[in-house]
Image (cartoon, rainbow, N blue to C red; front, side, top):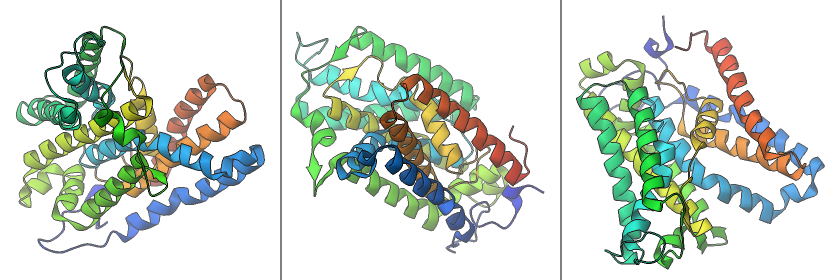
Length: 340
């Protein structure tokens, strides 16, 4: 008996029109809350600066950009797929926008469009990448892991090519607005992150589309037999995920006022760490968006505490890898299922 075939509300295809309350998922959502509280207490004793408002806002702003990558990956994982190319989309999408809106003579800009097009161009670039992934995975039935790994390499090469291996700078104000603006005392990127997570929690928990993600991730054949348009849902999820990654890249671009050729490199490891720690299953059909959010929040709080304690960044990366392994072991023990 597998968990995806049991009566858990997030693993089964619910009856038509019936809204199943994800009670078990809600309990698992809170699993990391004690750890977050403990890290906050430890952080206070490491450095009283940790609990200062400015430092907490800084942590939230820094994690908000990667949080959108985590949200994207969580949605893709829940429906039983992986998207490794998200980290390259994170860099390439705003890079494409910068290429078209920057005037010739500024970096490698073409100057074909005004700065007002930068945000739509970024989102369109993300949507196109997601559409191509869907074409190869859904229509041509290629292995999703290999496809997105290949796309990761291709997109990274494209970003290096269009930037000439350097950095786009002197970006128009419209392109850096979302990463720099402050709304009601908090960075706009934090608000955008919170709003998108709230929307995703509502969609995955209380809509037919969200239930379809769990049903497909749990058992795609059963989902298809239940009348769910599996191909359409998978394709839409890949496109939405790529657009979220593109938006996250735009927020980082705004905060740094530049697009570097290396933007997003290595981010996918943090993304997977956050998703796994947050309870999202690599086998599909399990996990929640809120759990993924607490996963990335916990990771950034740990990184901030280590930084305040003077730990070198190289050790922080090693810690992330260790956390992934420990989370996988705990997940294997608690679920009783092999992770293939």
